[in-house]
Image (tube, rainbow, N blue to C red):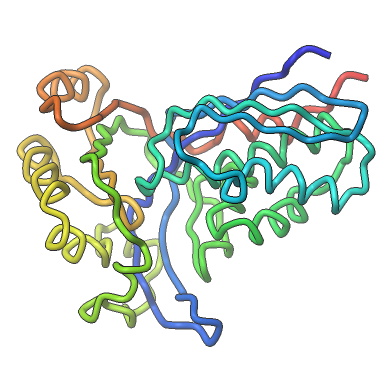
Length: 283
């Protein structure tokens, strides 16, 4: 069987609040996830001998940290299938930037193998399996822009505008553990409603901390804010800004200092992986 190709999109957190700390050590969050049409590519060839392999173009990714291979192993163990797969990952989404690339790759792997192995496992169960791999995996499994609470797994679909964005990676890595342990991090933001978000009464609670601790991100924010309000996705390091059309975004991107990596992408309410969940394999 020849390889089948699947897309794994990046996401943006349009805001991010922490409302409380949980007994398990994690935090209760509120956020909105929106996909963007900037994707990793997952290629899969089904094997009949049950073996699993994964090759990624990502540099310095230890096998034990490869969410794609972990997702494949998890689904194989859960389903009991005798099939296997050779998986290749063409990484486009910057790693460690708050764009959810690893979680998206894992979700697309679960969706694709569920189809290719003809397992017919429900989206709800796939999302539950995915949660054990990472808090962001469920939103990618369900494939719809969402209002999220809990650790990010309690999802309600939300219909958003689909504007154009410039996304910039300033070339540094933000330590999530370090940022979460910051003494001045606001951990008791009052819960808001979707209407508050739509009215702009929200923020990213990590924005000021990350800006203060990472000069490269501060410089990128100041540069991008000349053209449109720059925001942080997740805990960073990527920042983004909204534009009303592609031409305007492309014009600004052309001025981007060469020391940073950036791209233009459109916000999307549906993930391209959503098509996988709705498509039956041709026998």
